[in-house]
Image (cartoon, rainbow, N blue to C red; front, side, top):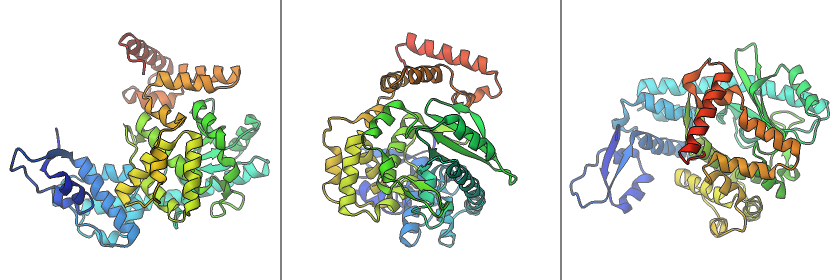
Length: 422
């Protein structure tokens, strides 16, 4: 395995070392072939080290020593720092990372500076849009990263994200689009039945993206599952963003993060020009930590109940397990056992675990209630936007969209012939 580290540790010492400095991993050698051993990639070692750094930043504890064996891995460290979205959080404690390589410290500080400037520009654009929607009598709900940035983070710039998700239901879509146009937004090539992407370029040079949701999820099946106990009844004001802004409540936000992790693990996370099939971004662990710190026992019980009704219990259990492993996350006794017990419905968890685009389409088609919705879903599936195609075929940048459609059609036919309808 390229770039791997070979170690010989007992299971007990493995567990103990997970919560200590990463340096312990990097100098162990196999001395006895009968010992338990495993292979750790540099990426895994970097992730464990960064998790220790995040934990120290959240608890105001001394930062772990920088592992000397990673000193020449600046490119990999930079990539993972960007993926995890933690630069601003760590830069607040930059003095504690004095033993970092100079190049890595410069990357950390530059990412944090850029994040702060982007946040100031992005918040102004979103606040103006939300105010315009309110003036036009459209009820909008901010979801996911931006909702968290302005509710549970002391400095919104700490919550790294690439867009803002806005939910607007039961409305005249063309009138909503007119508001977006008047606020300087233009539609991108990613327009689907339940979700559209809009972009606004400001004089500062930033292009800000809004994911406009006509339903709580871009999936008909998942939206139908969430309708069993929709978050719209638990929204709250978000005055730090705008006096007229609203967002999803803390319990719903917690569950959505866990669902989001499952989605990115199943479908991939776009990191620059790369697509990573990962759901363990450290900033999501921080989200869960900050949301849950004020939960009462009743809140935890309500969370388990809502997750059960949505069919997301397994996804929530996995999210809690991830947060606990990375940030020593505490959960009241009995909650995880309740989430892990067999459920009559695990609609959302099953959807992401299916691992097949063919099965996802079948579930979404069955959940689409009208012929118009079913037709729109078929169209989305057959003719996705250019952004989707360019993400799928990064080597085909600039190709005519007709050629991209033909390539996708041939790929699909090949998978069906091979018995892999993914």
